[in-house]
Length: 561
Image (cartoon, rainbow, N blue to C red; front, top):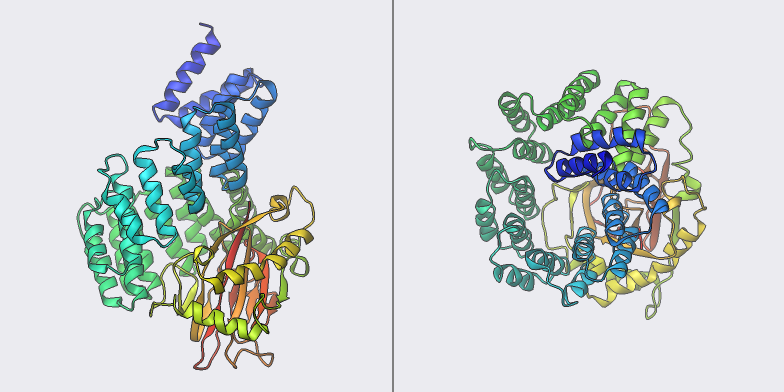
């Protein structure tokens, strides 16, 4: 065996043993000596992906593919890289290429199924599951998720009940929590949360689902009791403490949130996630320089962490440390090249520093209102909106505001409306097809632009929901991190939302950061039958409105397909 082959074998052993940083360091050394050696590049793609360097992984694999024939394993690795980047159509094509090269290569089937689940494509997941291949526990877990996304909760629960889970036990328990929450079987939901080990990495998510389920049903005291119950045990993990802190803050229990943060900080004073939340507290309390110092401490413990770098970038912008913020955003984009929040931060950095931000925030080009004609079968848009309001009203079953969304003082549906088998709702998606295709057609060809470079001929509705805001209701400034094109369609508008003031209007450009000089730059008046399309990375929110009537919308996110 040659010296190079022995070194590669050792590095691959380190990679398989989870020593991914050491393996990546070794690959970087080898690439200095063998920059065009296919085996070094292929392993380098794996190690780069393992340390979340998505762009580097893609560059190495692309170079390897230019030097040697494509194999099923290489195509599968490319699919994994693209899946990590949330480039769903390209990852699908890569997995399908792997299967075409070797129809018996099971990892490609497994990863294709996982991609369908992650990207919430339940129909495609179920079709693959019926292909006759044995996916084991993973397949039944995926089946339950797909059925849940389709609103077939009893079938999803039945699927889980038929499995004696081992490897996927915690994930299946979490899925039960999701299903029981959706079915309003709250006592069973609480019991199931208690069955999940508090030390599980999935426990914070289960706690968030449980608290949100109670809040949406107006059960505030029960929600607070649940937070208290699971942030007292001695084996409560740092991430569960953080989830409790965030839930209390979102429920406007600021004193309790601060007190719990202090407990967590005393118990885990050097934990990077706890330090990150402490830094977030400092920023929210007006201490941006102190926040930056804490983020630096956190990153010294956990270098390259995407969440910490993103938080630090926000603090650096507010503190005026623009060069630091720029470096952090660029590093984060190396891990998440399609993360829309990072592009929102880039635009905010440009505005705060006085740089030109119009390439990203070209409102005239990228924010487009469409006043729609009704679908077939309706005399006018008013009669269609009346039918749509009735259909959505049957799905607005909650009385409380969710704690995991941008709205304040209102309710939101919790199922993807694009998957609901209701003729009126499906007519809505038929109606918006033309405007969507017009919007995509008008996007210029630009491989460097985060919106335009993802342009394809087809699209998929990645999520659709309805929001009903009541008096003083509004959306805080936010973006849609996993989207591409976002929207708002106005179904029913109260009289106070009109041209005489900007109450209830949608606003663009103002971030969630405390930057008084970076305010909104564009407003659009909502009107019944109006659809507004804009990039998912563009900051948007709404102005609160007065009056007893409600404001009903049907927003959705679009991704390339």
